[in-house]
Length: 365
Image (tube, rainbow, N blue to C red):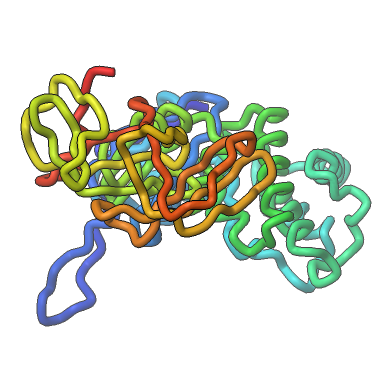
């Protein structure tokens, strides 16, 4: 099911009686979510991603704009009539019910021509349970399950209605690191098997990038960038997106462009043809550094952290905005024990941003 958002806006009234200033949670969001794709809504707390999800589900009414499922305008349609499956952050399972009863519950509330026989309901419940691999746990109560198993029950309960759209609100945030990895792989597998259009809300950029077909990066209710995860990482449209994506995060410097050259702390480090002379903010991905004893970028060496196949070099530089710089290099490269370490830079891993509005400044590579 294709989902179309047209100029979607949500404004909450002010809770501050003195200022009486309204809060714009989502501002003029326009996007078409292709049929059968998994889309990640990504951003920090308060960026409007969950509000967007709740407007799509029908739990919140937009202040402006329209929502279409396929060609049907569902903007004014109630949540129960939209055909969505919603999985909450806290699972929202009924503690007094068994797994089977929790999964069956949405089907037992169907009325009219949608009403199913007991046999049909059981068949659907077991099909959904097998899909998320909990069919052997059907007689247990939620309290007898691990966090990951409870999450699977919540997903099965959402899938049992055969929804047109599956909505996941921070579904992994209550799980430990190992379970998060396992469960996000399961979500991707289930989405691929069912082909259901899925919208996944998270503040964890690694989570979103690993399983999404496309990501939508948001800040203060405004969409910053939409694209395939790798494309957004490789080609951020502004400083916020560049800083939000990436582990370790991008290294940020104060720089200056003069005569088509980039200078950090007065030292020429890279050719940036086509860029006008100006002060700039510079972002360099951790993998954008190449060990080079004759390299122009000389940093103070703090420590070397061995991570198996890679090595993380922690250093400092006078132009760095951050207290330290993290450079990721291949473990085959040996870092000499010294007070400084020198690098040359990979041009496609270096980004320039305007000092005025933090927008991207492009240069010829």
